[in-house]
Image 1: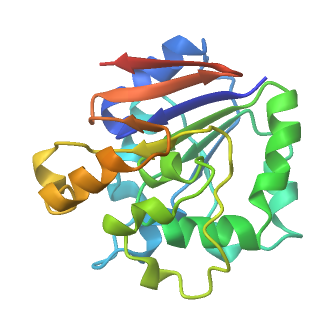
Image 2: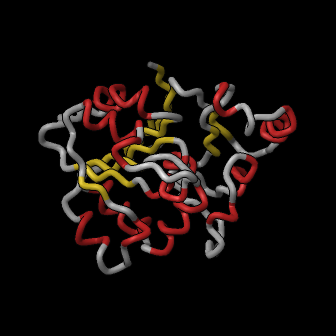
Length: 209
C-alpha cells in the first residue's frame, strides 16, 4: 500500500505525519534527501534547512543522501533497509533529473511493499505528480539542463501546488499564474504551508496543523 505525506512545508506539518502513520522516531530507519535544495543560490547547508531541522526536533537522526552524488549502483544499497524517506524542497526539475538518473522511482515499489512511508516537502511533493511541467511558473527548469523529460514519479494522479497564497512565495503566485492554475484541466491539490496531503493507497485527505 502506498503511504505518502505530501506537504507544502514539513517544517510546520511533520508532527502530523508522525501521528497519521504512527511513526516511532526512535526505531524507524530514515533517509533525508536534500537534493532539490542543493542548487540554491546562495547554497545552504543541510543543517540550515527547516525540513532537516524538523526531523532532529522529532528525535530522528536521518542518513543524508544527496542523489546528485549517487548512481544506479550505489543508491539501492543505501535504501535497502529504509522505512521512512523524507525528500526536502528546492527546485523540482533538479530533483527529478537526479531521481531519473539514479532510477529512484524503481526503488519505490519494494519500498511501499515493505511498509515504507514517503514524506515530501514542496518540490519533494511536486515530483510525485504524473507530470511536473506545470511547476515551470514557480521553479526554473534551466537548473536541470540534462533533464530528459518532465514525467514525475506518478505516485498520485493530481498536480501538487505548494505554498499557495503564502507571502514569501508571492512572486510565483502572480495573478497570471493563478489564473493559469485554475483553468488548467488537470486535477490539482492546492496547499498552504500548514497543510499536507495524506495518501493511503487510493484514499486522499488534507490535514492541517
